[in-house]
Image 1 (cartoon, rainbow, N blue to C red):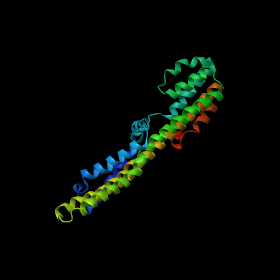
Image 2: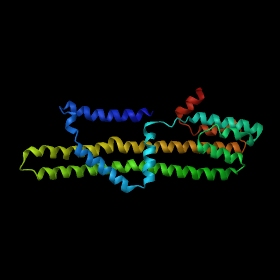
Image 3: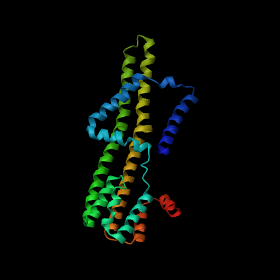
Length: 256
């Protein structure tokens, strides 16, 4: 679980709702089904028009990245590469065949298989970098689904506000209907702006960060595979790969 995402949502909503309650308001005053249908339905429609189905599906799949960490331990990956390096230096690259099935990561399997097959290091780098670029591009596009939703929802909220005011103006002769129309007008704006700035745009940003982190780990693996292929000294290889870690990860690895 990514606690920062959960904490951020809790703090954000608590601050806004708490502030409203402190001023004497109540939740019922911002609970409007009509406003919700206009804002969230309209935003969903705009997103469906903007992106291909495959990108939207990937966006929904990658939504979990905002709430959960990948579970991949960079330091453990380094140790895995160094273990392969030690075996390869003693028994040769072909002895690493058994290591392929020990990992569930398709990228890791692909890179290790290329090395075992005797592929030239620069060719390995080229093949895997194309994989990284393509994966990152698709991941960023999937985050743009939420980014686009965040840009549409405030405008849809304004549309909801205008519709509410139109309803008010058309019922000026009946004061009993004015309150509902005005409520929809203001609540629709709150829904649109709140959804964009508290949920959609932050989630898009978090997904982009997670995608970039995954790309950095893959770049680290490429350096590890190249080091394996060239028979690089494990100690030097360890120093090189450690450069891809954050300062916190480096400290944890050295303390382990």
